[in-house]
Image (cartoon, rainbow, N blue to C red; front, top):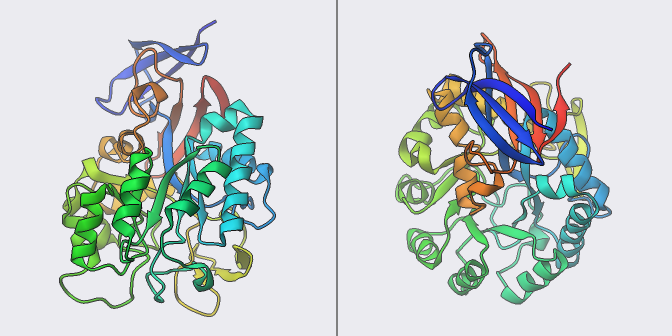
Amino acid sequence: MVTEYVGRDVTNGQPIRVGVTDGRLASIERAAEAPSDTWITPGWLDIQVNGFGGHDPNDPGAGAAATAGTVRALWPYGVTGTLITICTQSEAHIAAAVRAIADACDADPLIAASVPGIHVEGPHIASEDGPRGAHPLRHVRPPDIAEFARWQEAARGRITMVTLSPEYPGSVDYIRAVVDQGVVVSIGHTSADSDAIRAAVDAGATCSTHLGNGAHAMIRRHPNYVWDQLAEDRLSAGFIFDGHHLPQAVMQTVVRAKGVERSILVSDAVSVAGQTPGRYRLFEDIDVDLRPGGRLELAGTPLLAGAISALPTCISNAIRHADLSLRDTMRMITTNPSRLLRLGTDAGHERLATGMAANLTLFRLTSTGEIEVTTTVVSGNVVHQAP
């Protein structure tokens, strides 16, 4: 049995009909017509999600249900692939968290299809206020490849990305060892100097985590770690375009500097996403205030403590505030993250082609520039259908 989906192809605006059977794209044909505001793309990838909709895989008592809940809460937002992100904590906490993610994937093939990997953000990051962000200082520590091996064993090989600051002695050896295992190393929450950034890239680092955030409130004019990473063509970069983490002028500038082909939109969403304004607790002991305007702050400070917007908001802001086309913006949540993670075209997040996994996102672009997801398909299964 073939299930068909009709929409406009973002690469050329032409109406197409996509046929799906047995979890694969069986056909892609020119359609006679399609609604002018309905688009169809490969499934969207978000490589930095800490939690969503009240589900918190970082919670010390989180089990497999926290991962499953996070994934299901993101399906209505068009996300078909999520790197569940575990932040700085004790080794025992991180091991338990990644084990729970692996348990969720083993228990449900649809969850497994929606979680192409795990992202461990920290604990090998800068200890200074500012670049450390909301990560707890007492758990910040230098990189240790033996510790990474224990995480990976607990995760049953599902860790595909780590974020670290290369300012520590031994960082280069750590990066080489992790990259040799097929894991993406990203630079983030750093106060590293230019030499350390360059050495990290030479060792195999290929990404910058939410570049422009997780930084000092005031930094040296130049050189500094933001310029160094923007200028480094071997680094892709994740950007949070939620309207709070980067102002409009910065959104425009960072994509122009990095280039669309090396830019990736991420949500950096935390469990508070989708909740009402108020005070919440993250990661066991971090109090945060969710403001009515959607800004999440460390309690009692103006410092950001994460994000609460899903990818559709970031897409809308990219188009409205960073002067990006819909085609280029879609690349930043499909092709670019898929290639960074080396998922391969067969995974169905990179392009529409017959034989690929049937991961699809259908959406409307409203007259006001909002993104409204109408259908989300994971491995040929409709996991979200708007009324």
